[in-house]
Image 1 (cartoon, rainbow, N blue to C red):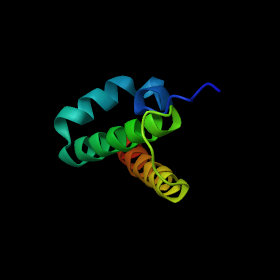
Image 2 (image 1 turned 120 degrees about the horizontal axis):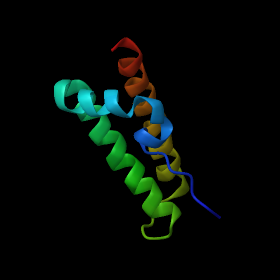
Image 3 (image 1 turned 30 degrees about the vertical axis):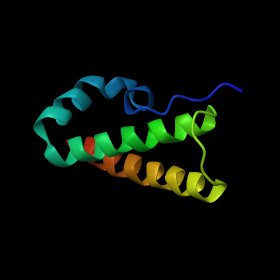
Length: 79
């Protein structure tokens, strides 16, 4: 099974320049981006079998990733 890449640049390739700018100029965006990246890396490790957690913990992380992505998307739309 091939895993989908869920990093923000892959999700929004047309906004790469804006994302890079916001990461350095918007503290709130930078914090959300870093948290999203951290959660996404953890999920990927579990899905690849390099880390272990319960299904509930994994589901909770996936929900958190969706919420973070929504928050990031709102900032991208407003900027």
